[in-house]
Image 1: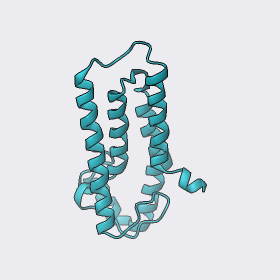
Image 2: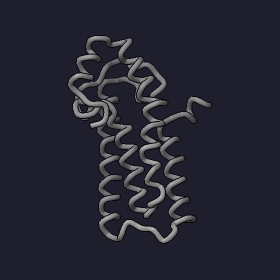
Image 3: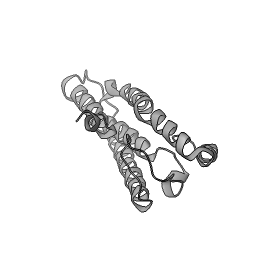
Image 4: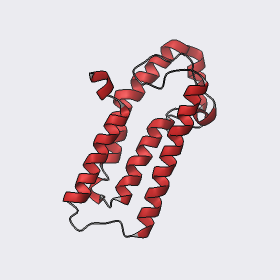
Length: 150
């Protein structure tokens, strides 16, 4: 049960809940200033969802696990993974940033780097270690060509 709770979507939901609570219960009269924030927030959320869908399609196409705690069967370097080694985590971060903008949760902005830090420590670094041990030279070459985030 604990492994299923310690998953990136659960962390994202928790951070989204904190941001929403800040906007709803502690706005302190702060806001981003209207329509531009709604537009930018919508674009960020849409972009985040698109990244996640594209990455999930690559996982499915390559028949390897999307679950962070499991060992990958194959190293994916095609599609969206040719641009970012972590498009799903990037998508999660974009969704968080976009909803913070849409909700006018100004005081929740520091949650974005905290979320990225937690995701990197809890998921990215252990995943990279497993991939490095399993795929050795292929993974090293992939890291040279493709950045972790963007």
